[in-house]
Image (tube, rainbow, N blue to C red; front, side, top):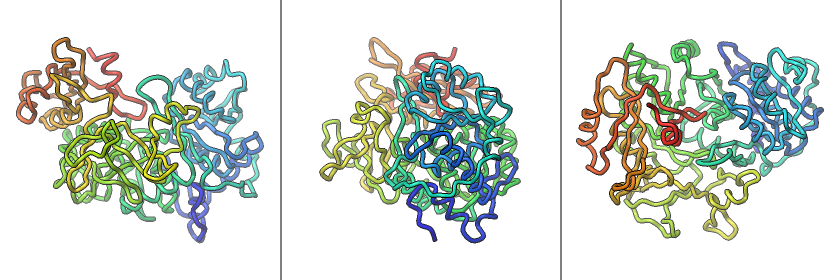
Length: 515
C-alpha cells in the first residue's frame, strides 16, 4: 500500500484496488466516488499549474460545502500548493485582507459570492486568477469549463512532509484573522490520532454540516478520506429537519457538532422525539458541552459513544474524554490525544500541582509552525520546550488537572471574570444555567462594575413556550453556585450572537449586547 506522507496521499491510497468505485462524498444527496474525486482533483491540479501555482503557493477556496470545494482542496495539494478555505459568510473587507495576507495566486469560489469577491479584488494591485463554480461573468473563469478542458496532472509534484499544506485562518480576540501554518506532517499526524481515539473505520459514514472553513469541519473530510470511508456533506445546519432526513437516508454513523448545533437538536427533540440508532459516534468541540446536554443526547443517539473534546486551531486537537468516563468525570475534557503530551504551567513558567489552575501547554507533531507573516504573535503562542530548540504551544487557556491527569477547562485568558476579588470561569456558570429546565442556551460575560471590579451577566435563551423570570433563573444558579458566582444580571433574549464557526461570541455580547 502507498504510504501516507503527504496529506493527499490518502486519496491515492483510497483509489487502490476496488476503492475507486466506493462513494467518497455524498453532497446534498449526490454521491461521488473516490475515482471521480481523484480524476477531478487531478484535472483541476493541472489547471492550477497552468495558472502559475508552484510548490508552496497558496490557493484560496471561498466556497460553500459543495463538491467543487472538496475537489479544490485535493487539487491544490496535488498541484503542490497550500490551500486556505475562507468561510462563504466572509465579507469583502476580510476576504481582501486574507487574499492579500496569504498572497493567494488563485481564488476558487462560487459565482453567487461575486458581489463580495469583486469588491475584495477591486483595489488589489496583484489580484489572484479567479475560477468560479456556477454562472460566471467576465471576471471569472467557469469551474466546470476549466475542469472539462484540463488533462489530469500526470507527474507528481515534488513535496516533503515538512512543506506547507494549509493556512487555516482563525479570528483573534482583536484585529485581523491570523493564518495558522500547518504542514503535511502535522495534518497527517493529527488525522491519524483523531481516527485512533474515535475508533473509526472504513465502513463509517460521517455526516458533516459544519463549514469546511472551520478546521473541525475540514478534518471530517480528511479523516474520511484517510480511512477510505464516506463523508455525507451538508451546506449547514440551518435547516435541521433536512439534515435529520439525510442522516437517516444515508445511514450515517458519525455526527460531529458544536454546542449550538446540539442545543438546536435537543430543542427539536423536546418538540417531537428524535432517535438516530445508526449513529455510533457523537463528537463535540469548539466550546464546552454542558454535562446536561451529554445526558440528554443519549436519548437521541441511544447507540452512540459521546466524545467531549477540546482543541484550538493552532494544534487542531488537544484532548478528549473516553466516552465510557463521561459520567465518572463530569466537566472534564479528558487527556491528551494519542502521540502528544500536555502539562500546566503558572504564568511564571513553574509546574502547577494537581487541582490548581494553570496555563495549558501542548507538545506534539500537530503543533503549528506559527502564524503566517506574524512572528510577533507566533512568539506569544510558541514557547521554548523541553528539548533544546523545541517549541511547544502555550494555549493561553486556563485549566486545572486532577490527580489522575484529567483536564477541566476554566476559561480563556481574556474570558476569566474577576469579581469581588475572586476568579470566575464563565463556563462553570454556563453549565449550571444549561441544567435549568427550559433553558436552551446561555452565555456568561463579565461587565465593568465600580464596586465588584466585574459583575457577572448571563444572557439566556429559553425554549419556546417556557416562562422563566430573572429571579427564578438566579435562584436556580444559587442552588449550585457559590454566591459570588451567581449572575447579578440575567438578560432574556431570543438568540445569541455567533462567530462564523457557530460559536457563541462573548466579544459580540460585550460590544453589542442584545436588547
